[in-house]
Length: 241
Image 1 (cartoon, rainbow, N blue to C red):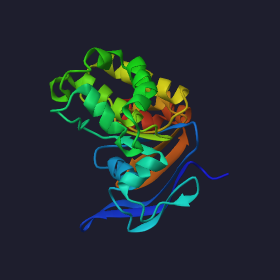
Image 2: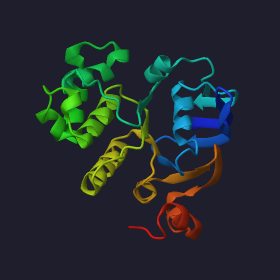
Image 3: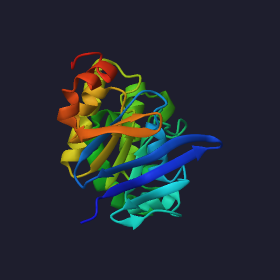
Image 4: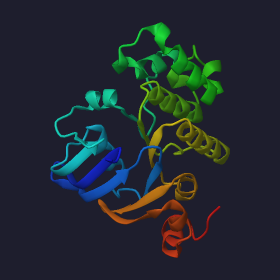
């Protein structure tokens, strides 16, 4: 049976700069897989290629065995791939509710049909229910991250791409966000997680890939990498907390 997501020898460029250099990875249905690495390693570029925002110059990306070459980004959303981007990028002048409804735009669903999805999001993020009529731009950083994740979930993704969900958050909120990532996965959504907080990411993931300079340099079960001395030294500050 085909992997839910598969990248085979994918390279990609921003103008004359090569961002991805022969990246190969797979994500199976039901997993949490994490990409870890330093700034500039190619993690966000990998998600952009999967989302259809950075067309590969070579290699293949497939969903359920279907080659995604030539499939535009908005069609990938309807196929089940949705991303909560780095930096959140909520619509600042729109309310929380309007932001969430925008997340379901590609589904062309009637407003009444969105209620089960809204219930799910508000169950995961009770703070958003309290702020439903508040403008997205007036939310705190943590609340905006919740909104970005909730908006992505409104598309009913099979594969949720999360790009640095803990960036800029207080430690208590970081743990809360990762608890929610685990809950989303427990509810049946497959997750590909890009995260600089390697300790938290590896503790929540099934498998992990390490990226350096646009290449995958290591892959293993997350628990194995969590205990690997070289990974600890490079990404975990020498210890796991």
